[in-house]
Amino acid sequence: YGGACYIMSISQAGHYDIQECILKSSSGVEIPDFEKQWVSIQLHENIFSNGMHGELTVVDTNYLPMNMPLTGQDFITLKFTTPDIEEQPIIDHVFYITQLLAREELSNGAITYTFKLISPETLRDNRVRVTSSYTDTPSEVIENVLKNLLKSTKNMTIEGTTGIRKYVSPYSRPFDFIKSLTRESVSSKTSSPHYLFYESTKGYHFVTTDYLYSVDRVAKFEPSDSSLLPHGMRDIEKDLNNILSYNISDSTNTVAAARGGMLGSRLIVYNIFNKNYELTDHDYLRDFNNFNRINENPIYNDNEIEEGKKIGSFPNSNINLHPTSKSDGIDARYNENLTDNQSEKWLLPLRSKIMELSMGQSITLTVHGRADIAVGDKVHITLPITGKTHGDSEIDKVFEGDCLVTHLKHVFENVTKEHLIHMTATQDAIPHSYDIIADSTEPKKQGTITKV
Image (cartoon, rainbow, N blue to C red):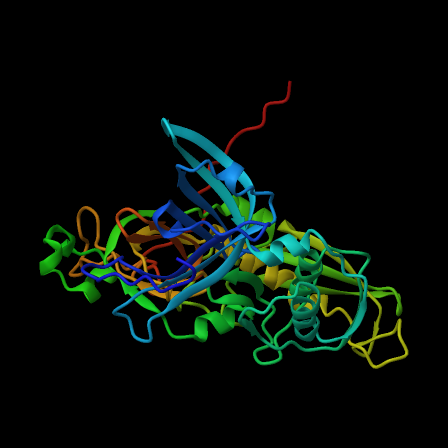
């Protein structure tokens, strides 16, 4: 094989071209004709994860561990493209093989192995520590760590941050250090604190949800009966946008949202330098439009649940204490003109946003695979109404709109030459508001007190 291009004819949605698929051991040995031996490759992406991982399943008829010992220092190079899509999007990555997950004997002389795959940066993260001090903005420090400590040469999308601060790492692992900086970052463009740091097939991203929402959607999905037609009679472009299966997994939990600070919370910032404190409150409904949303309306009703109070009017449901040493916005611990930790700008809204993405309205769906979709992308989903319609529309208005892809799994099957994507798409807002047609305050039942 040796890196030569292996092109196949495309007859249906989900097919892919193999540009490169090479397995190389730590001794430098490559498996000949490896494109014929692997059975399936799964690649996992998570918008809350620092690195990609996956599984590789191989059918072995040459007793691979003896002829090509795998020691956990081995790697596989993958380069897959989706034809018939503009500019031929590509998945081009190197993964380390770190673990044998499963081994099963099929017949005499044939064994299947399933190996664990991780990104090279994830392996390096477990080998090195951050031992330097930095005086810069968080975005510049994160770029420095990725390039110089984790030695990453992948594509990077980095949204600039405000405030030059001094960071001293107590021998932290690089990703732990980046995580702490991500938590305390504020965008220099939108003042948004909703930063995420993750890896996808498109590279590393250190961006806010405001940026992700501002980017054009990459695909529109809706169920179609075209999948019942023979392959030769289908429109491949429409088939790529077809939802093969879906499941609405609304994980909204009002109790967890209240206790966790998504709906209402309070921050007490204690100033060690000036010996005073400041209070900052978060109210989900009041602050809903402070930053960009994927759609226009809250997922909770804007109605009174008690006299004069709405669902976000209870800041004492989640209380936080955070120290600072600022004087006129400057960190008083240093002689340099450095910014303080700005906890009043990021702590409450970031916590609320993470809970919205984790506990908001979400849908898991399976579609034909394509290399131009990754976590962090915006997709448009249209679903039909299940059961009786209440009006003229036959479209589910709650899930008819843009969604953010938060979890994604690429599945490449070698025998059928099929690429499928299983994804979770989440909304932190809905496209159509709920109709309030009557009083909805909490009903009260008057009980009696019996003292015994």
